[in-house]
Image (tube, rainbow, N blue to C red; front, side, top):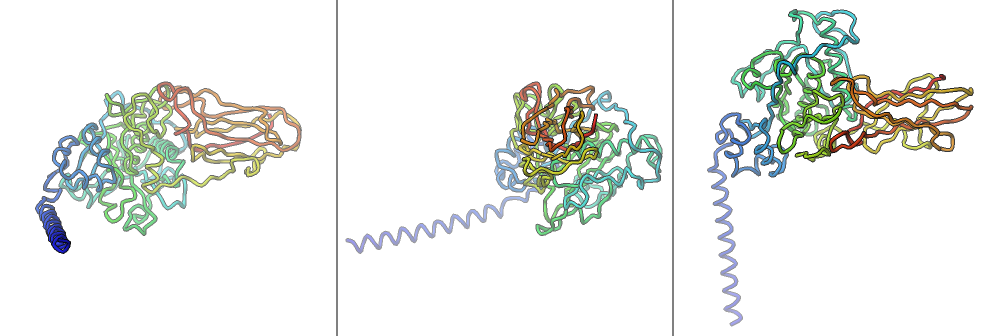
Length: 477
């Protein structure tokens, strides 16, 4: 009886092994019979339609894009600007602005004279020279070849013209250089918390391309494109692939991100918001909207960068703290998983670890982490009134500063945190802070902290996206 039971169990086990082997073989045969994705999708396809085509292979396509199945499904089903290319890679076609929305005057800053081609100071700007990561803002034209954009249009190469607003593409006028400077300043501030060089000086291609996982020097090109070769077909403001910034092996194939002047205009504010947004897709970010709108336009003086920042003085990274938000992803965390680490802190958080600051000499720093606090030690040699000022970035500031003056015991003797706002869509107010106090000779400390304003649900913002650069000074007054 016992022996018969063992023989029966052995037969059952053997049958299970055979059945399992047959099942694996059948599965492998079924996989082999599945058409390649480029045959399944065929051509670049809008999100909802594409979702219907790849339902049975959603897991595969999600993995290809570095997304969860649910995230990919939701994006394709609800975001009308989402597309899959023939290889199942996710990209976005941003909506075009109206003619009234595109109109914007170039601000007259910095440049003092016209320069030939792209050799002037406007094309030598760097936010963090020496970083292994780069975001290159390309205004002077580029040849696009061997990329997904070429494959989609069936044209290779494409020679994109340089940025031009005066009808003279042979040189960059003062006004055109002014736009380049301002776009750079705004995008550099959006990415100021990260270890990345936002630049207008063309890097070597090796500094952008990533050949393999051991290649630690890479980035993205954001091309300001005034031509019609792609834009006329999509009627869009820009296009970019998601999550390809740190892609190894096929990196160049999904470059560059494109901002179309015919879609967003030629003004600095619009170009900068679009450039930061498209680069944001490259570093893995989706859109910030609500259940009823794909792009949240913000409230008060604030908007999310991955929504629509054209109409607000303050645009910041977001984790969906506003009312009705449909995207609660932590932007800083997602960006970090695609190759951009936060900057190293340059000043200590406590009086014991304070950095040195000399009366009459400016210090430049950054608030990179939400919990970061920068403390500076000041030795005052003569009694009198002193004024300390912490200025947020002069253009496109993201950091809302709270400034404290502490005595040698670490007690706060003066503080400033003005209400923020905007004088127009391109000019925030109340981000900087100033304190004035009568001081005796001795040691004092200045503490810079990031702060929010009002209620992030519908009137303001939290400390989450309140990060960026500042300049700190203290002078007799």
